[in-house]
Length: 419
Image (cartoon, helix red, strand yellow):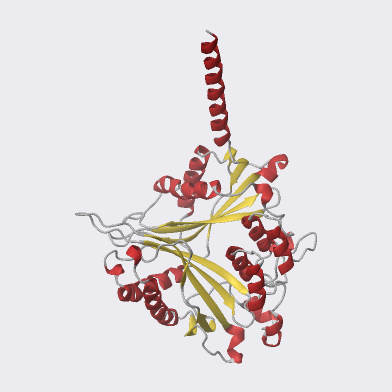
């Protein structure tokens, strides 16, 4: 009898423990989540009534998620007492094209920015690429259904985020003015990051994502010379952190380039990214790379052959589409006179998904994600980053590097023009 009693008590404790753990896993991530009404990028033709349906669809799906205790619409207000543990989401339709035929399907791209409600600190950006939405024009309630798709992407991205308290404080409002002088964000404490600051954070074992977040939020005076990067590597600074240091806006032009640095007026008029009108005299294109862990191409092909083929055509397409007067290969000599209006572009394949063809089924096109970083050539000042998802590659011809090099860069440059 005692054995049965002991077994009963133990089994009850196990059930309670499992239920407690399950309840903990199901606990909402934030206190509140507020979805602001969407906006439309200038030049994008998207009907206001359709925007309303899209907003309702995203809001409906977020209500069903477990991201927050309460999901609020634009008319509500996040209570101040829970603002530090709440998120505001702002969405912008950056591209839209109606479908008109079987091979011309509707496409919509939306950029979502997630901010901490208490200080409007940017936490992350989610880009939703809605391609292949249908061969007919989309209007009205159809957008409410489509709204479930980007809401799903927001939920998945949010689940991977660190607690809101781990992100640095937002800079003052004046520092957030849109690239007003290309200046780095200032902070209330006046802290300026240096190489030693980064080494100190690494040696004290702060999480990498926290260090990167601080790099993005604070002004800096990093030494990014070759010898300094070697020293950082030897002291345990990860490649991800060093890349964030290279991409972070600087407090001023690099000392070695001070004599050739563009004037403030030129710096202010430079657009954040190249566009099809070709504002740059020269675009130097670094050789394409592949992120660690990405299997490219499929079936263990010669990655370098594919990258070389892509690179050759990519240069021609950039020049053809007038991103710059001249697109040149890595290491090319550029006259000093052109330096104030020249950029460097670095590209990387960050993800590659390939579906093995099945018998009696049409092949599925691979999906490739690419990230491009743009820098002013005179002082390596970071101008911006662009992420593209390319899914228009034919499955079978793609297996040959020369076909890849002739076709895929065309689609990449077309996507770049839309951003």
